[in-house]
Amino acid sequence: MKVSGLTLTFAILILVVGSSAQDGHKQLPNAPSAQPSPDAAWQSDATTAQAPESGANSPSPAASLNASSTGRMRSLGVGDKFRYYFTETYFQPGAYIGPAFRAGLRMANPPGTGPTKYPKEWSQGAEAFGRNYGDAFAERAASHTATFVVGAILKEDPRYIRSSSHSFLARSFHAVSFAFVDRSDSEHCMPAVSHFAGAAAGGFIGNAYLPDGFNNATHAGQRTAIGFGSIAAANLFQEFAPSMPRPVRTFFSLIGR
Image (cartoon, rainbow, N blue to C red; front, top):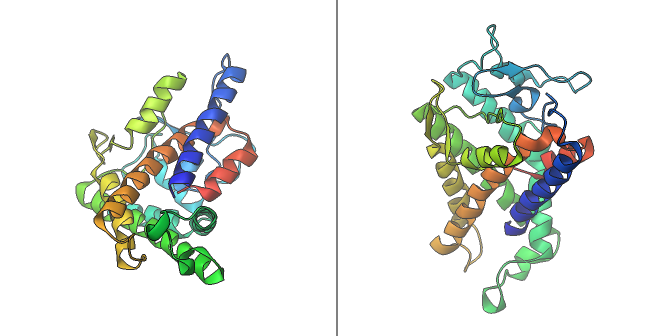
């Protein structure tokens, strides 16, 4: 889990730096992310939404949640947020491929050492893969569900909004800071409480079934921190995906959160 989060973050940064160095003199294209999510069909700053690039895949059915007749990002009602959550959590390939990728990484490099190392029933064989896959899927679903519930109660907008800057550092800071401070339904900045709640839910749900030594508060806190870091990494991906080659965008959209 730790490996996958760090790998995603560093790979995104390396790719973006290379792309920026090659195309730094060009204006960034108004292309959508290849990530199959409702946000991916629209490039937007805090007040405008731009249409997808020519030749891009058609937007998902939920993509219309980002548009309005005035061109502004329209506010989402509870029903819209539920559809957004359900699509993001269950109706995209990454929802099922990502947990498999994480399960494989965990089995290839089991956590713990010595007497606290993962037991064989969690690190060897098909049944172990099933257990790790189930854990990764449950962690993701719990995180997304808590994010949706808390966000709906506090009226947080669940969509990531790309920066309007062309500066690599400014866009990176915007993406990372969006994990801590996001936007309300009324388009004002607010603490991203739903992100903290989602990370905590994903981190602590494993205490219900993980093996002894990994079902305590310490490990849950570590998983929570990694989950929150994954939110920042996902923001970086959405911010810089338009400048990535399509195969790379697709790969990260399938293995990421």
